[in-house]
Length: 337
Ligand code: BYC
Image 1: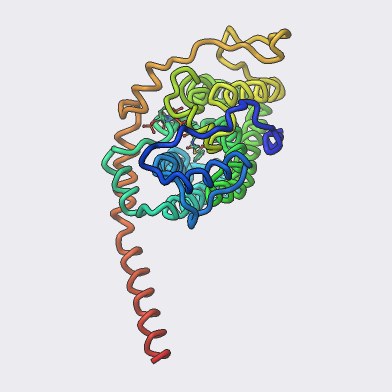
Image 2: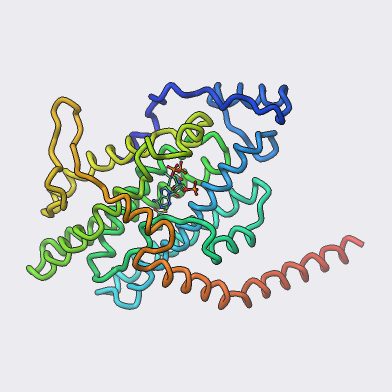
């Protein structure tokens, strides 16, 4: 269901790149443009315009930050998972998110930035990460709903990124999407089990869906008309499908899943529109979204404080790894001498 987008052709017709800047060397720029127009891949050793590089650093680093901050809301539930089976699944999932962060920081480093600088920007509140991780996980059903809806939205957004014009990002996304697919299924299955349980369990699932539904729709970013980065990102083949179109695809795919699960999506305006061939939906609270993105959501401070503490507590591991690498290097040099 989520994988159909691998083959979706570009419907935007916006394959031209931004008009050349006077400061960019024309011959190189022409080669870059031709590569983008031919739907080719740009690799780290290739010349690229500075604005393209900066856009990628911005998006890939924010994506990496989202993965490692995204470990925190669910990580809170590892010690309280209701069974050994659920605990093992959750540990694996949270560990996968850490791995996604590592692939993405590595992809960003191929663009000439340092991981240390990117992490500094996150820890000092200068860098953005996904709005969705600034909401609390209040009960066990929240963990299932994060898998079903948050990972479901993430897959919808990330499948088109497998065809991103920057090679290292596109390749990282292939593996990330496979793992996200397992995450989405484990969440949905956990909820199916709860929905076959007691009334109290069913109520927990509905409550979690009520709290997370609108926040998940906002994950796709502001409406296309208010998205300053979209046009250029799509022209460069970084983004392939617009924020609004991805949001619509997510809603259309999720409504039938909600029916099977037996939950109500909390939107009285959610109705099938025969003429459009899509579900209509209500108004997203964009004021609340921007407040959260700008650091004033319910858990922003707690998430950053936990992340900074984890980074500081792990300093000895980084030091030990560096000392070991230096020792190995010295040994290799000595043997070669
Ligand atoms: N939250 O012009 P726009 C996961 C920002 S990880 C916060 O549309 P763009 C998971 C945007 O950055 C999910 N900020 O931007 C992990 C921009 O600000 P700047 C993360 C948001 O880049 C663990 C401004 O708003 N996925 O799911 O064209 C466990 C204007 O927006 C958000 C990715 O990062 C938001 N929701 O499009 C479980 C995917 N939305 O940078 C799950 C990669 C927008 O100009 N990223 N902003 O200061 C993308 O696809 C795109 O960057 C976005 C935004 C669609 C998110």
